[in-house]
Image (cartoon, rainbow, N blue to C red; front, side):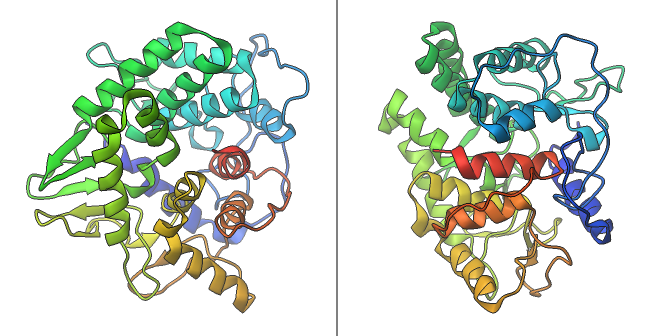
Length: 363
């Protein structure tokens, strides 16, 4: 079975390998995985299907994003990564569409996701679709962040447009997350990154950037604090403990031992990097700034020194990426530090664009 973390490890390797190729921004359909975050990529494949209708007066950045990355079939296309799609992208797209009032795009994305990624055995979704493969969904494993985003988007869309079936599907997903993705151990309730491959017996592999607090808070409001409160408390507790190195920063992946103590995952770079930047965003968007105070302090110190904020930092050695955060990452910094969001050209990679949108609209 393919490990979902491969996608994010590749994000590190490919961005670092081509860090010298920093160029200006454009809106011609660039992807993310062949260049550093925010620096360009492959052209979007031609699409002969009828474009998805766009309501009037949409947010300009969302309009540009959907033009570049939203295929007429309803999938968010990772153009720099061979045209694959994943539930993370579908979830982000659905959430932005529900938030910004783009019902045609929301329906197209949800219908595609349901048709191509829905699992038959549980109300969750397989994480990856590769159109180049004879079996586009070769790995049935889910990705918890994608499922949380989709469930939140469905709940918000149901409330906005009054579609009971969307709320029903969100409810099914929320129950499936509780039943299959939460492990109770040592009085804690850990939110796992996926159904398979992350319970290592004596240790648990955890990605703190999957703690999407706006989603968890919304689920608690819908299902009751008693249902989600233990999960939320464990996520908060883990973030208080997962602080490493001179700057007390979390790493993209951690392992939690039997005593509940987290450590940087030993088989991955010990970096506060491309995944972990979302930790601050999700916490601040859910009014939990104190949880990420060390991250804010680190970013504030870099600003005060006049140095660019690096795209990643090794928490043990202090080594920094040779290239800065993308425009989306910089917007996350500004949101975290309660600074005005600077308007920049749309980042030239899928992930950077998503961060720009989330920094502006995630609540």
